[in-house]
Image 1 (cartoon, rainbow, N blue to C red):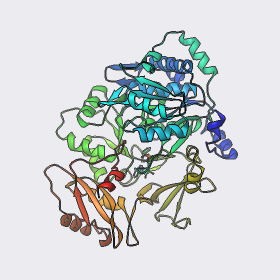
Image 2 (cartoon, rainbow, N blue to C red):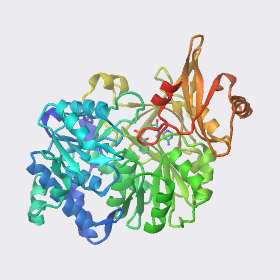
Image 3 (tube, protein in one colour):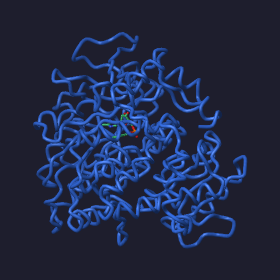
Image 4 (cartoon, protein in one colour):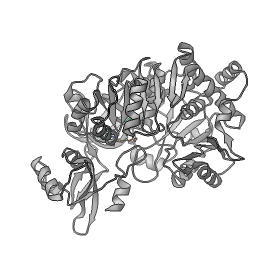
Length: 545
Ligand code: OOB
C-alpha cells in the first residue's frame, strides 16, 4: 500500500491485530485470492445473474482477471484509489473483484451522487480514476466523470461501462473481454497481490447530513465481516441472494449480500431497483431464497404483495435494516411475504448485528439481534461517558476485528468520533436485552431539542408508523422562536387513507407518548424523499420545514 494511504489509515493496535490473527478472524489473505478458490470449486455454477447475463464462477474469475490486467495496463496499481459509481449490473461485481485482485481500492459511491460528493471525495482519497456508466436514468455520468476528473490533480482516467464510450475515455467492457493467456494473467496477479492488511475498499459513512466520511476496510477485516455475516444468516451453496439496494452500500455488498453469497458458493441476482413487481418476478423466476432491504422498501413490497400473482415460496428470509423497523410492521412481514424476517443493525464503520434466522417472534420482531463476532465489544454510556446500568439505554460505543479505528484522513473528526482507547462512538442509542439482543432506541444526533427536552425522532417515527393510515414517517426538528425546536412529522399515507394532526396526536397520546413529544405539525407527502439507500432523507425534509 502506498505510504500516502498508509499514513492516513488508522491501524488497529499491534497486540490486537496479533490476537485477531491468532484467533483466526484475520486469515492474512487478500479478498481477491478467494476468487479462484470459488471458481475451482464450482466452475460451471452460475454466480451472478443480471437480466439475460448469467456468469458462471469461471467466467466471473476470468472477467475479473481480464479487467485487473487491463487496469494495470492503463497505469493503475496497488495502493491507488478509484471512485466507482455503478448501478446494480454484472460489471459492478467484476469491477469490485478486479480491484480486489490488483489491490486498487474502490471507493463505493452511489448512483445519485453528483459533482459535490464525487469531487470532494475524489480529492480526499486522491482518486486516480472514476468508473461510471455512460448514462443512467437519462443522466450523463460520463460527462459528470469528465467534469469531476478535470477538478482533480491529474492524470485522472475516466472508465466507462456502456456502449457510448467517448474518445479519450476507457471502455471497461473492452478491458474485461481482452485477449491474452488467462493462466499467465492469473499467475501474474497472484504474484502481485496486495497485502491482507491493505485497504480493500472504501465505504461511505451512512450519515444523512454533510458530505459522507470515508471508511477504509482492510482485506482481512472485510473478509471476516463477510464470512461471519454469511454464517449468521446460514448462507450456503443453495443461497440465491437478490440485490435490490444500491450494490455499493455495505448492506447489500457484504452483509452478507453479494460477496457473502459468492463466499458461500451461492448466487447473486441483481436488479436495478427495488420496485415490487420486478422483485416478485425475479423471486419467482430465479428461485430467490433471501433478499435485503430497508424498512421503507419492505413496506412497499408488503403493500404490493397482496395484489401480485407471483409465486414467492422460495423466499425464506428478508433481511431488514438501515433504519428503525417498528415491531408491528416486523410482525406483518412474514404473513405478507411468506418468509421470515431477520433484522440487521449495521454500519459502514463495522459492527453488524443480526437476529437469528430461526429466532422466536419476540427477538425477530422486537430486537436488532446480536453482534456477528464474539470479539465485538459493546459499551453503552450515558451523556457523561459513564457506563449505564444493565438494561438501560445508552449511546453505543464499539470496537472489534472489523470496526476500523478511524475514518480515512480526518484526524480532527477522529478525535471526536473515536475515544482515545479506540471505541467508535456510533451515535446510536441502544439497550441490550437480558438475552443479549441489541434494541436500537434512537440516535444521539437525531434528537429534537424542544426547550431543553430531548425527543428521539426514531421514537416518534416508530409510533407514528404503527398507525394504519401511515406508510412511512419521519420526524424532524422545526425551528421555533420560543422553544428552539418543535417536532414536525412528515408522513406518506396508504392509499385511500387520510390523517389529521388531531387524529395523529390522539393516537400517539393513547399509545402513551409524552405530550411534549407530540408532533406540532403534520405534513402529508405523496412522495417521500429518500437517501441513495432508501432512508428518509432528513436533510431534504429539514429544508421543507
Ligand atoms: C447501514 O449502514 P449505514 O452506514 O448506512 O448507517 C448506519 C446507521 C446506524 O448507525 C444506525 O443509526 C442506522 O444506520 N441503522 C439502524 C438499523 N441499521 C442501521 N437503525 C435502526 N435499526 C436498524 N436495524 O445502514 C447498514 C449497514 C450494514 C447492514 C445494515 C445496515
